[in-house]
Length: 466
Image (tube, rainbow, N blue to C red):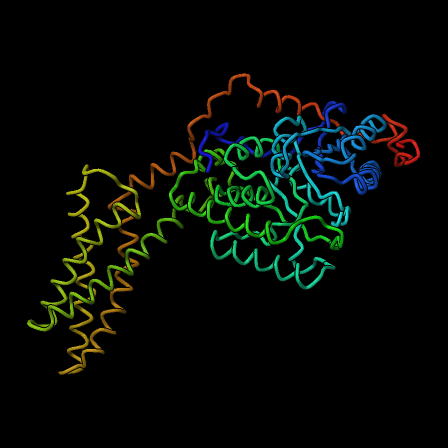
């Protein structure tokens, strides 16, 4: 698994601005290997569709990876005749290798790829890339497994596809629905950060890319597609499935050992709406509440075990006081470290002293409940005592959280709010290649084909390409 460094923290997502029509907004890559028969019809159809429907400048890149037939010749002829088409030749086989090479060198701010058989209906292309152009999402994928998708394929491939996605969900906790659909897009800045971390060069390439993006917290947009299986597909299902399972094992092991620097892919502070200082919603409340509930549940269980043990040789009041005292010390220490993120020994004694005051309030609530139970019944059952104590402890827990947040650990809340309102400024990047990409993006302009190229209003004549 690659551990080489990525370019660093991603910039905030923004809508791609309009600018120079000479810079393509979208670069659609078609990776091919020995596709001399299907390549020309695919490119002509795709070019005609983009010229008719896509409102920005575009490019179609044919990435020939080590074809041994006339695929390279067909690609060169297409590039010579159609200005928006270019051909790239790689001497090594591998779809992932081809995508990595073209995406790494492309100057377009949105990168996409599709299979040469065009099994996916092209009407899904604009919905695929629109969330990336608008700045809403980081990656986009076509999904054949969405409810509104319309798919025509055999039972064998349907079973394999669904089984593979179930494996991804069970082993890598993937939440995207379709990893294998050959219809995906990614923002260039995201690609430049993710590609150094992706090791696979074959069919598992885009699955690995998606898993790492999802684990890094990036946003993946899914588009339902209409998809018709290609009966002449040259994909070897058994060998591809075996390689995919090896990739799942490798990526799962890397994620488990923490060898991937996914924290470098985080968006800057302020890009996530959860970073914002929303009125009447205290900062960090949700996270602290979850942590407090977990600690509280464990503390309650610990308290009940202690109470049962002490109750075997002493009265209920003494057993309650001892169990509550011991569990209160443990509860304060756990909340200090886990819920409110206080590290080090500084202030530990003061926090425990304040925690004992909170403990006294909880003791008053639970002892008062026991006293009320004793007054109501001279010999209550042990199960009744436990039920009363659980109810009293729930009330004491709510009060304990409020006191912890407002009195015992207020500096953690204030520090969190201060960080939200006054985030550390991001250093201005030095003029690098990434800065050049961003400068190019600011010059993009919507382009209408009939304004620049008379060929773009119609598909290229196949007879001219012979």
